[in-house]
Image (cartoon, rainbow, N blue to C red):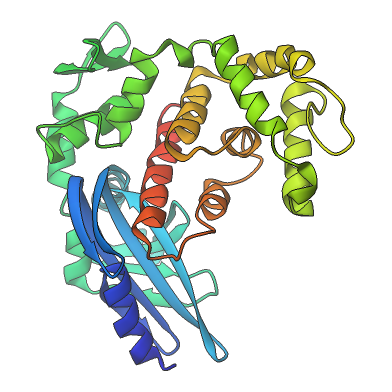
Amino acid sequence: MSLSLMIKRTTADFGVELVASSEGAALFCALRKGGTERIKSRHGRYERHVMGIWHFVALTERGNSFETRQWHIPRYLMAREMGLRIKAFSQFSNLSASPIGGELFGLTTLMGSPDQLKVLLPDGVQLNLPKQFIRSLQSDRPLLEKAVARVKERSGLYAVPNLKTPAGHAVESACQELVEAVAFEKATRPRMSAENFGIYSAYCTYRDFDTSLEMPASLLRELLANQHARCPHELSDETYALFIKTQEAIFGQSIWGRGIKMSIDEGLPLLNQGMRSLTRHQRVQFILMNGMHGAGLFLPLATVTGAVSFRYYADQMCQHWQPDDPQEQDRRHETAYIRLYGELTSS
């Protein structure tokens, strides 16, 4: 199939627009504004409840076929990155000879000036983005600046005035960028709801539920029982090796696996100790992966501890769907925000 036909198919299947192309490659994008969205796709009508995402899709020719690759970048992250780069150009006059490079959740970009931006695809292809599209990527900067100005600091805590969680807790944290991200979400969706998943929703999980402080024995037992119900011989060698490595790193030994006879009761103390070794924010990420994706025990642990990337996690969780399936897109949108929550709270 020719590149032109693949461009038409990709545009229709993913609901994106062509941004740039060269011989054998094409880049597409769409801004998913966020909130409750009603989507019409070739898979039927669908309702999504996630905050804003810049959705990039790249096509790269591989002999007689094409490889499709995606990136899902939260609106806050794009606005922050564009703002930081433009600020750098305003402060330093000699950057034109040294473009500002950066990676946005795996998408590598290079800015030569505020109106010059190129994308570097994984195979080395470079695509220059048109100025009009660059301006659209920068369009959220004023909104972010206003949101940041609303954030107040007191005694080392940053807060969004008059914003509370569903349980009535103030939105405040020592993590400044976390609170700024919440303020930005409120600016994009003034009637913000925790039901639309994003940084505010993740914060509500952190603040309103004691599970992130300490996981109850009943939940730990359920997690381990579900793991024991799986046959380790059904896993690929790669996945099994990852699960063994993860257990040994977190628990000090394997509590489940091929030839391991440890009972649920014997494994519970080790699982409890391992969960306690995580930071509270890592436990929030784990809770979200399980509550939203039914991700199991070891894959989320491997992801939040850095044994595998969030892209790997998303690929594993989406492997049974077509790339343009609305459910697949939901998982990748949500995973992007779970990842961003971890990055905003890691400092």
